[in-house]
Length: 97
Image (tube, rainbow, N blue to C red; front, side, top):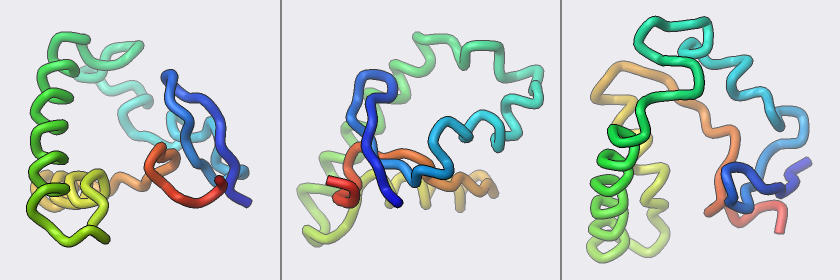
């Protein structure tokens, strides 16, 4: 079942059985010495978020309407850095509304 709830101030969709499990399943929380408790430094995160918003707008403006900018960015990131990042929660997901 897909449900919606507030996470980091956003209304997100999540599979009920996975709600709150992302940190339990993520290697970064093992702990990794390069991932400080509480996440990366906020200034680094804010710089990256700003750049990602510009990329998302570019995707929305220049690609087919059925392309999800967030999924496209995540997929490109995973390919570039040889990572797997399943999506546990998404505010843009049309399911669970």
